[in-house]
Length: 315
Image 1 (cartoon, rainbow, N blue to C red):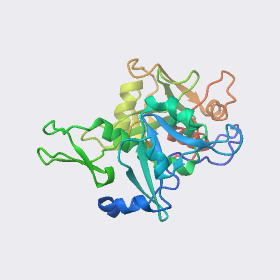
Image 2 (cartoon, rainbow, N blue to C red):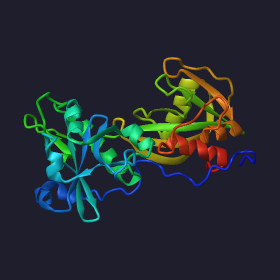
Image 3 (spheres, rainbow, N blue to C red):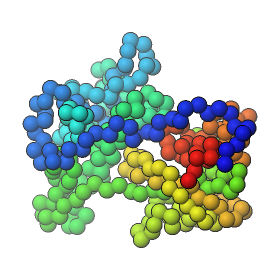
Image 4 (cartoon, rainbow, N blue to C red):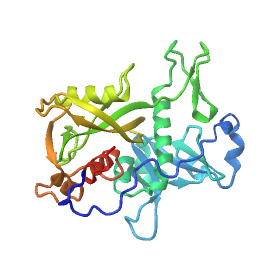
């Protein structure tokens, strides 16, 4: 259904971390060294939640260019380049820097920004976000998997950062992605949204949770909604998915139809949850809500699920 009183929401926004994905060129990972000498090779610098870059244009605030030559990036990194893939024929890498060096890097003219807010605010162009998501997630995986989960011995990176091998027991370890369901629950012309304690004041969003072993996506959607808000649901439909590098998840966006109405909030998971009518949600999308309430930025899949509800686009 479409709600005639909704304001004009304008063109459909771009979803973050999905535009212009690199050719992962997995066949090059075992012999990546020759790519280091390619004059078109460039690298992203990532450190924890931070991404480094240089100001675009002569005026401050015009944006951040996160691509460096390999030589420039290596000045700030002690690790080996992680091969992300090819942009056309141009090799792309990620190198990791220590966030403790932030002051020195900024003193050298670099700009450092938290990737989440830089992406949401459009400070980093959308064409870089997929590669940055890959680089950030891969770097985080290496930081957390330095030891073999089989025998406890130190592991070493191989295949340009896409595997870690244990020289002690021979185990091979590969990067993992955590599947997360994120869903908008609706009942007629209203939808259910929640607030987590860490949200910015006034922000409401979709419910979400990790898929557990042995679960289907639909089962995970229904379980999480029931656990967090006490709402039973029936039909579940898939919307879209999005890599989410915080730290390394795949957000599986769904719409769910409620079969009950009384909310029972799990306060260990949510600060609050409530029903919103579609007209109110439309005002939240355009940041015109009289109480200053709003939803996540267009870069996030939650925004797209919420807008699809308002415009009647859900499957």
